Length: 411
Image (cartoon, helix red, strand yellow):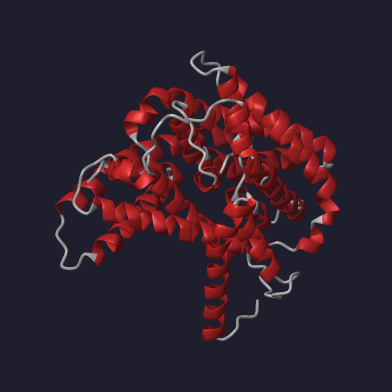
């Protein structure tokens, strides 16, 4: 991969970021999700576009995506109000685990027949596209000023913030089964239990430790508190991963614990993490836009569109109704939860795992995943306000505070 001079590289990065920020305004006026525009800007700047930037380093893309996901999950935890989530905790956990699993199974069966993939490769594709994207869901809802009534808001917030670890585990596990034929599917079950339990326990314990440090430490400069917060967040993720747990689960749980604790400069730190989340989100979508080669997409277009339609109209709705049998949710509420399952940059990041592992059908899986994400953001992202109005789930008469003021508790 050719790298230009540092000043040219910084000029390119600054220009792409500026265009992405301006795209949020344009997207709002045109009714197009900004996330889609971020991807398109990256594609236009890439090797097949007028920008001509050659980028095919999947390791760097995965590293950027992993770092961005850590920031997004931690920030999602910080802005999760425990009092709002507690009533929908069981339903949210069901969606984040069983919902993802059922989506993988249904999508995998369809992909096997339509895309001519082997069973394990088909289920791997199903796992990659099985989770909703927290940044995509709430980015679109904020952009389009869609206010949802309770209990939908906290349910979607909790589900989209917690279902990524399940998709990561399924993707890593299936990739291991493909690349190591001597392994049995039963061998990955203990790993799943270990990762989830350690992720929950370490996330909770380390979250209290982070809150205690932020509450009691005194630094010489105010700007260092943001540095400290990022440092502690990265330590929560890495320590949990090194000890054999899911760092993604831990960093989200730690964020919830910290966000529901009191400490000095909380409002400033929340604002810092909110801005960082946008930066990471834009950077992730731009990087993944650069990574794709649009000239390769027409070859998988028909199968990918069929898969995207099946995912939106069959797999996701069936998974929701199977994992959400609770009577407290009306039919129209379940239908909206099914439709709001946007796929964002996380599936594209997960699609780099089989590429780096040398899976035979990895490039095809990556291209199909990218197409599915584009289709999902374009169709579901642009129709969310309409779906909310048709299904009568908008909180028209409810005054909804901004996420920042609500999370800070007015401090």
